[in-house]
Length: 340
Ligand code: PLP
Ligand code: COI
Image 1 (spheres, rainbow, N blue to C red):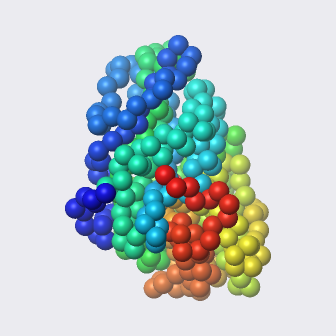
Image 2 (spheres, rainbow, N blue to C red):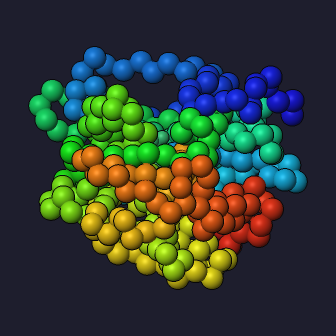
C-alpha cells in the first residue's frame, strides 16, 4: 500500500480529510448494517437533536504502524465499552461494542494510506461518534441517530512536543457531581471552550479543573487525566466520579505496576498536596503523556522538580514503555494491541 505524500514529522493535531468513513443509521429501533462512504458531509434536519440539545457523544483512539510494519490499534474494546456507557447516560441507543470495534477496524483499513509510518512521530487518530439526527423540539431524546467513524493523521496534541507544559488552576468548573464528567459527551467540551480560550489568552497551555463540589481536589484537564509521581517514586492518579475514565491512564497504572515495578495509588488528590509531587503528566489518547512543569494557582507557582526542559525520569519511562507496547517493540499484555 503506497502511503500518501504527507509531511508526517511536522503534523499538528488537526483535521485532514481522508478517503473513507463508516456510517450507520438507527431508525425504528434498530441499527442498519453500516457502510463505508467517501462522502464526508452530514445532512440532517435543522431541528436535529444534536443541533438543538447537544445530544452527541464520541470516542478517540489511534492506529499505529508497528516496528514490523503491521497496523494496529490500542484496546478498542474499552473505547467501545465507554461509548456504550456514554450512550446510556444521554438516552441514546447503544452501538454494540463488537460492532464498534469492527467499524473502527474497517475504517482504519480503508484509510491505510494515511496511517503514518513507524518512527515518524505521527499516528492516525480515529474518531467514532454518534448524534441524534431526527427533529426534536420538546426537550427529549431523538428517535433517530447516526454513528460514524472518521480518521485523520495527527502529530502531537500540544505544540512543542514533549516540552513541559504550564497549566493553571481554573476558576471554571468542568463537571458537576452526579453530572456527565465521566462520559465522553460533546457537551463537556463545549462548556470547556471558554475556559481553554481564556487560559490560552493568559499564556497557559491547559486548565487544571478542581472538583466542583468542594474545589479542593484535583480532577483533570479539558482532554486528559492527571498522573503524579511522588518524591519516592510512587505513581498517583486522582480518583473521582466526575472525570473521564481514561484508557491511557488505566493502562499506564498497570504499566507502572507490572512493567516498572512501581507502587501505584488511585485516590483523592488535594490541590494542597501539589507541591509535594516530583513529576506531573497529562495522559490520554491525544496527549499520550505530556509532562507538566508548572501549575499556577492564582498567582502561586508550583514548580515540579522535573523542571521546564524535559520529562521527569518516571514519566519518561512510562512514556517509553507505553509507546513501545503500542508500536510493538515491547510485548503487550494480552488483548491490548489489536491488528486491524
Ligand atoms: N479526559 C478527558 C476529558 C478526555 O477528553 C480524554 C480523551 O479521551 C481523556 C481524559 C483521556 O482518555 P483516553 O486515555 O481514554 O483517551
Ligand atoms: C482524546 O484524547 O482522544 C480526546 O478525545 C481528547 C480531545 C481533547 C482531543
